[in-house]
Amino acid sequence: MRVFAGHRGPVCSIAILDEVTFLTGSADTNIMAWDALSGMCLRTYSDHSSAVTSITVADDNKTFMSASADQTVKIWVVTSVLPLTPSQLVVDTTVGPNIEDGLCHS
Image (cartoon, rainbow, N blue to C red; front, side, top):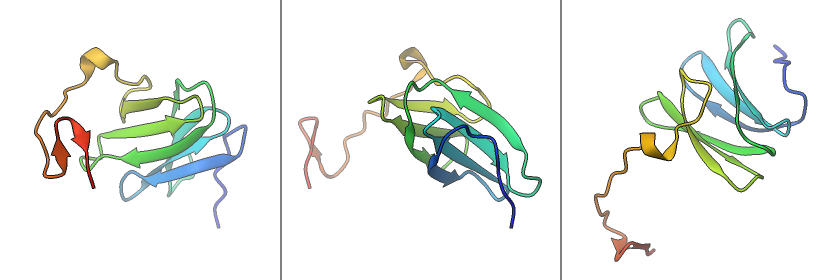
């Protein structure tokens, strides 16, 4: 068993990035990328002001999103320690099958 030590608070979320890397979100407000083989922290992402409660990785494994108790969702590029700003986002305006007039319907 390997222990991954580095957060200063409880770990609240985890997501697998690729075959050897995973992300953890913590009550210490940080997200950490870990090498599962070596146990080393590869990078720390810090921009939330409260606990990171959820992390999800995009299909491309190059970006991920984090949600926090600070009531924000941030989009990150794995290779950058700062989240994307609104001007850096590319929004897909394609309307999906369950969206009408900009509202989601089930």
